[in-house]
Length: 221
Image 1 (tube, rainbow, N blue to C red):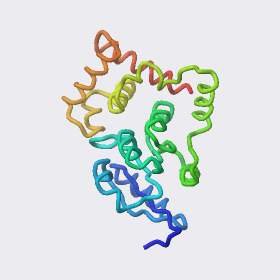
Image 2: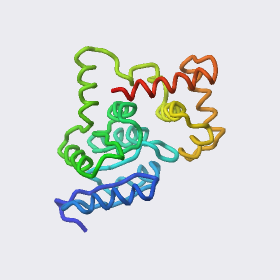
Image 3: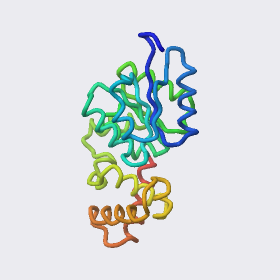
């Protein structure tokens, strides 16, 4: 059992190697204790109360409820909860949406442990952590009133629809997307249809073209 100064950490990631790596990094830090690890959002939401975490580190892509929807649920229950998103998804596509949901930071998975720990300590101190590039982009948007990528057409998409839209833009087939998100191919086809309707695209060809274009433009930031 940790003492009263020990920081209680909860990790949510469905990739065993990534989850183990995060746990090892956290527990190598003096005064940190990983009190629980989860593969999905639903289990965390159902079991969070007795855990009383100081920080939750979570992936965006999770089976079932995704990470951003999980953040919305958790922050609704406890607005003071500190959540750091650690994801393979491009920061320019998801950081702003994660922050709007209530997360306190966003780190790409390929970043080294020094960047991760910098984010962890900043969030624990009550700060917000994103890369300098994204921070400048958000500041510029606030100063000029110019819409950011998250204020564009994709704002009409749900978090899961946005995730599917991004993967389409990266050239993934419905089968590949279904495997990656742990969903049925039929479900992915339904998402594709919804995205096409919401964004008023004429057909699947236009959907793919616009998705590729959007991903490309977002990664220029």
